[in-house]
Length: 324
Image (cartoon, rainbow, N blue to C red; front, side, top):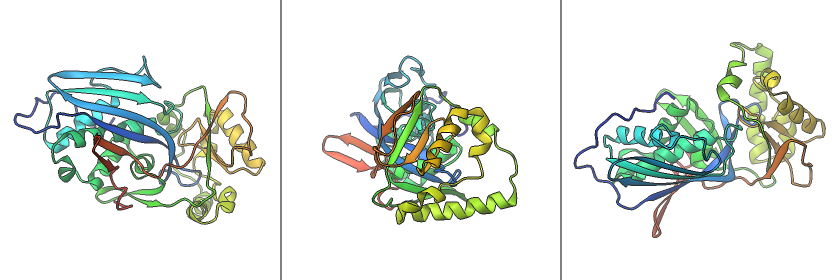
């Protein structure tokens, strides 16, 4: 991934690191939400947890849960790569690092598992460096996470919690958080098969008709209002003309489920690049569809959370100010 530093740097002599482990909890996310392509995102109450500790030498990784036995257990693990990139950004490098991951977010399903790993690696490394928060502030964390991921729509809600609007400005990624209204309730349909974001992006055309772009702009604006003040408008507000139909041939089951739910009056969209589906509905409004796991989730209000020890915990970056 772009922006992730290599691991050939030598340890920094005299650098100050915490002797105790740090723990990071990061939420799953759903991006796009229909018309908000690469801009809107939502944090969900499903979490990965990472514990990291500076060690004498070498890189050691343990993975439990999703991806156990599949994900690498060395410096090529995404959490480690992002931690090393963060150490390099801070101008320090420990002699060794021990990382333990408890993964609950389904991998490669459009629920932000890679963004969660990126955010966890950055925050863990920042917390392990004495005075790291002052050296790499909250806005810089968001920019670095977006550089590594390639776009900010998942990393922003992972960091801030709630619903977010993200964009790329002259200095990099920025985001603001908006508060979802009461009654906005996400249900996630997760298929057994996985999807690849790169393949989903490759299906998108280089240009779209002006009429479709205008429709999408209007729906994206309406979606912010529906999410924050008028959930009854979520069905029209989640209509999309920019990406979902173009991706449908590569994920026919996903598109069929979205179409079927919407025909029944339930606001439904492809979650991120898919193949999961996000529906805004109460748990009694839908039934489990064959081949899909139904996750009844809430909206995470905290975003990423870092615990340095049992006496101290700090909220995730950008959360306190609600904006970067």
